[in-house]
Image (cartoon, rainbow over all chains, first blue to last red; front, side):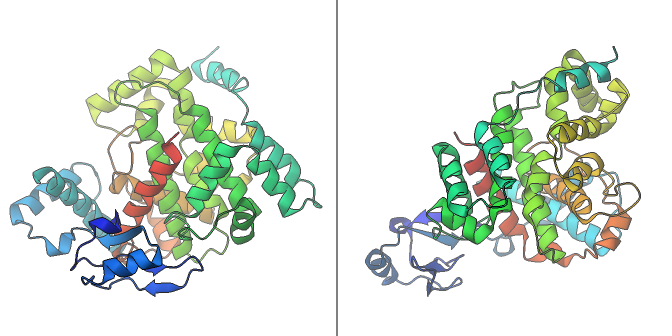
Length: 108
Length: 282
């Protein structure tokens, strides 16, 4: 997930989740750039007030088997079908992923 | 009079859509109208104009702050897209003050509809549909019948919500059990009253199966899948928390694969959060 934050709240090490554009739509900094200490000064010079940075990535968080199992159980209770096709399996995964995000938010 | 007849009778007296939308529709029927004239009609309702600009500049359309006037919005998005956006906002406003009934809250209902609009638009773009102007609006309207029933079926709808709670079933099944018909039928009647295009009317009527009159219309199919995605990702609350099985024929017809979600999970959630806040705020 990404978050829209004021530049004053940006910190070195954060990753841009969306490019920074000037008023003409030209890219000043592309998405994916990791912020360094000098960037804050640049943003002020460019008149940028808000930036989008990457939030906590589920992939980078350690998820216990127990938590994953719990999420699968919660989602399974909401469906009365078995995921067979590639699309359905992916849908199931997304449902579980969303529940994991909820569980992680709650545990914080 | 049966419950169905009583409700249909009440639909006749439903408030009409706000003036800015009617004036816009009238103006659009004039082929000689200029973009500036259209822009001035939209700008006459300041609140609507500001909201349009906010949505246009949000992640939903991705113009991130580059469109600062209604004329520019018309230029970049086209007249139909802007008109549909205003239509969507008008309908939300029209029913925003509905009261809550048990765990059915209008704000959560609209959140679900916004979620379906966003997800359906995504499905449409994966299907490489060139003209996506009806996708968001059809998502906003797909469950409108529920809100009508919710407001006009009174005690009967309390029974519907109780059955959902007790049996943990889909709200559409509970509606059929109590009323003998469901919200998609009521939505269709309203769509006809509002003279909506047949594809949107069909999306409202047939989004549960994804198939209209035996054929797979792309918009109907996309709303069917969009509804399932919104339910899977818990975008708002449609009246029950189940996720129905996607219609196999629709999945095959649209050639949907698992890769649909690989890169879009985050952007659906982000778009939803932003658009939801924009459209549901005063």
